[in-house]
Image (cartoon, rainbow, N blue to C red; front, side, top):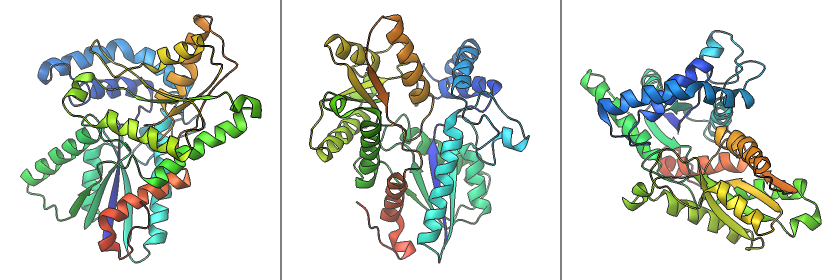
Length: 363
């Protein structure tokens, strides 16, 4: 069988000029940021992108993911043009590593099948419509859509699924035959291997970043991308999924450390989920807590929200407010952690184990 797996993600810009287009695509998507929709939102998105892209580009320069040459996908313009970018999101190279490692793992597990793993980004290359076309060219018979968002939200996973369906509709209207069987993975926020990967990152940082005495006083601060309260009130399960993930991890850890949950990356004037991660950290400092470990719980790669927002901007704000903490550390992203890759294979096997002839061994 010809099996395709599409890893769905937001993506990230690969150059300063790409930042502007990336922001325009992001703010123009009513599913993720509702600014009224239609022509008005598109015009507003162009204006926001024009005003903000240079400042955002500077942030990407500080965390440039490919300082020695492109490590991203074959769709990356830097790779095509043999350009070394000083302003490329790390999400590109890290997601490409995830794609390659997962493909290698699946081909090893299913040697009797022809397995292709693709990456489809929403707001920058490789775009989902290019990957849809590639899957058609590869004559894929069974296609699994696998979001790199463990917790389901209509603004991320839902938006990706809807856009993929729009592409399918356009292809059908063009008279293209789409013969594959399609399977959707909605969420895997309590997958045992996913939780094990997160717990492993926590333990790594505790063991190597804190002394034994400091570890006894560490507070864990889980942080996730926030969401507008309007989405929560409409029934979006994302926040509940985040809370369930945190509780499952702490259950694994025997609830031995004090722990907290905050939400970051608020955009626009509307009310978002609380508490805000930054304000939560300052409040803990005011309580006299001096050893903090921040755990990005909904991000599966290191990128701007972790490497810059938490590791640079938060530290700068602490200094500006003249706060003091001897130890504030951040766990490494899951990236290509073997437990995380196994979690992805677990979820794929749940959907197509009857095709591969190898039932799912994970939970």
